[in-house]
Image 1 (cartoon, chains in turn cyan, yellow):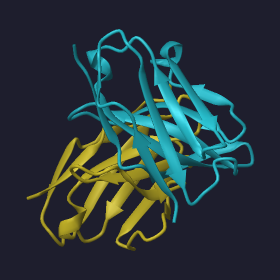
Image 2 (image 1 turned 30 degrees about the horizontal axis):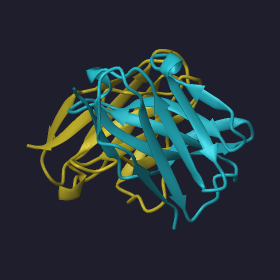
Image 3 (image 1 turned 90 degrees about the vertical axis):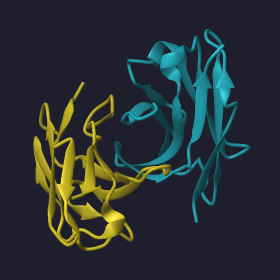
Length: 122
Length: 107
């Protein structure tokens, strides 16, 4: 059974850097999938932040591209999100997600972590 | 960026009735559309892949249809556990985008 678990600080100060990690159990992140971060501000919809391939190639939402880095750590079977210069608008539930991939194309987000709430506040 | 517009924003339905949710794309996305269900305090759950293929473990009362720019998620006979938020998402092109969601509530 594949499971994803987010970890990281629940509170970050404005202008600082948010750093989250997703540990993956039951599946190797080096296998043919993408790994993604998706967020959801309180009482709002879902926003894709970015996805990284099993080879390390990353794609980002233009809305956060200049501030975001998603990377893999295959030795620990985990991947991470770094979001710099945060503001109150970055307050959200952050989900790490597995994304299916085949024949050069990405597909749906099939397995989700439970999510972690991050608040940006002084 | 491909914009997905879901309608209605809220759908009031009685248990046992049919619910029909719509998702419209700003440009053609072939069948590269997924549907998710989200309940309060929970992560979203994958319902439908490739517009019309149920994900593992999803009951047969859920069905999806459409291609191009118009898509529909139908719940044939609403059960109590189906009252939730529903999102569509396209994976035809980067950036990946979600619709704004449809809340299915008890009438």
